[in-house]
Length: 485
Image 1 (tube, helix red, strand yellow):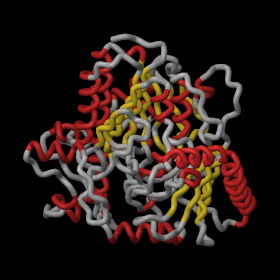
Image 2 (cartoon, rainbow, N blue to C red):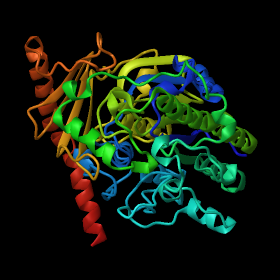
Image 3 (cartoon, helix red, strand yellow):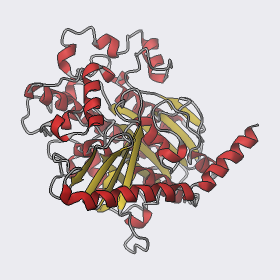
């Protein structure tokens, strides 16, 4: 194929992947040879934080370079207003999405020339909007019933499985195989010669935790898998988080029956399934790399691998996300390819939406000045001339699951982390230097009153500065709306 001076960019985003899921990042319980290669030959960002702890708000922030309070997407199913993908398209890139992006509208273009959408694994719920994606159609054409919460509920072991099941349908129909397969098909068939931006949204390891037996075998029966962080949850957690736990126990979100007192065997089984899901994904990343090589473009392609948020997996007594604990908001993030330093580890605090201006700059595009995200390229340079972030933020509004608070905000600054709830006198404050597992809440500790007030003032200052910086963004959106009318 024709090589371009501008690199192709493949942006792989998994759904709900924890930090402790890549062996080369220091987690020897994992089997991830392909991602290990990307770590060793590329750049890893070890302190990457999401800007919101659920799917659509995190992704809308990532693809706009703005925080949820700026772009207006606080929860799933709220409409997206803008995406920087359109800037890549205007600059001559072929822009393609395969898999999950969790946009609203689900098939809105948002700058892409092509979208081959696959959404969440489990959408068989009366409260979710109806939609048939490419994965639904693939099952229909094969005459096979797609696994979902409805089919899993028919199992005798459903109430004890905590969302962990072995994939029994054909392997090529597993979503974490099907989506990479579609991406490889595009790389094989597309006849254009322009540089491309290929966003691959892999649905896993989001629950149900459903690896094939081939991958699960490598994790079954092992006693070296990390076990959940436990303590007196009700004594240490504020009311909004206690309410979230109560909600988990009452609803089987994504086919997970979350148990208040699971056994060690149940916890180990759940984690074995989850980690096996990631090893499945690792193999599929290798398949994508092979397809790039077969097309003749691997040497001119930058690969980015990350996730929209993590998963507590019963850490802190919680299921999935909707909280600000480290397993939810601290995610893996890797970059590999031409112009990306090999073997570099960036320790600075960075935010997931920083990949937006970084990708634009790789494509030769100057990011809009109003973007709240900051390019990661200076952190990959030996001659850094820009100060690093000294704090990161995340936020989430109430939705169908986070019912115990109208709005929560997180700040991490240095070793300190604070979570503020707009409608509660309770909150969370952790000193991660001595309490990396966030077991001891210092919110009411008299000795830490000064730290708490400083961090609350930082949130206030950030909101004001954010509003000022993004005036031009709102003017641009107003201009787009006027054109539409």
